[in-house]
Image (cartoon, rainbow, N blue to C red; front, side, top):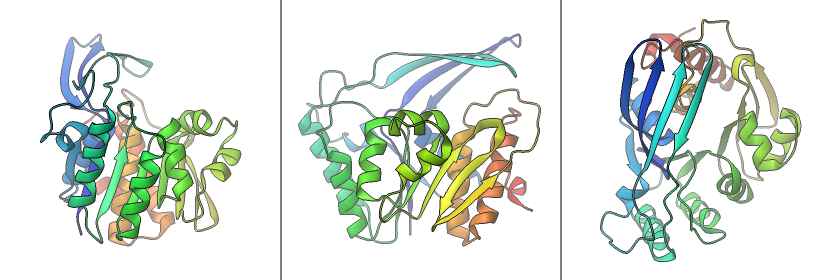
Length: 270
């Protein structure tokens, strides 16, 4: 069993922290963040971006470059992001990406798709790929929004995770309860919607679960949602009860907002 974390729209980011003089440079993107956190907990997650899947090709589209991002963070108050345009990949490139994942993923593997996607994929591309992988015995968790997430819902992906704003954008509905009902595919084990400082709401195997968040002093919430995603997968690998997993996810996500780096494994206890 292997864990593969896929970032379909990576970014090279510069983060400016107001008042501290710090400038942090990182290779960002939700899949990369999830993989880093899992590795910090001893899970040898394999991080791949859309450009890794295209490495053997050349004609991939009009702009096959990784995005560049700038973030202005005011500790404990706000984060403002600026990005260059999403890369656009042509149909040939998307076919190559699909072939790559069908070749490398095996029965028993986990495939985590996290973040937005480069553009240009043919309609139904994500639905077809996820369905093919599930038939091989690959477990799939999708943490995204919009058209990508809608295709994942249609195929009944194993796990759905997003924040409330992403859920409402994807479903075009208001309210966490209505969103969760709409995001539940026929074969979906669980839907998890994060609610920021209020914690998270989920439906897992037909049972509704709400976990409130502890009060912490928030310095920088960057990546907290990715920590939640990593914890959901970690709990699955450890065969924890879902209540324990989701409590740990909220606790780890809240701790991350303190801005003290990767969440230590000790935070998951209790």
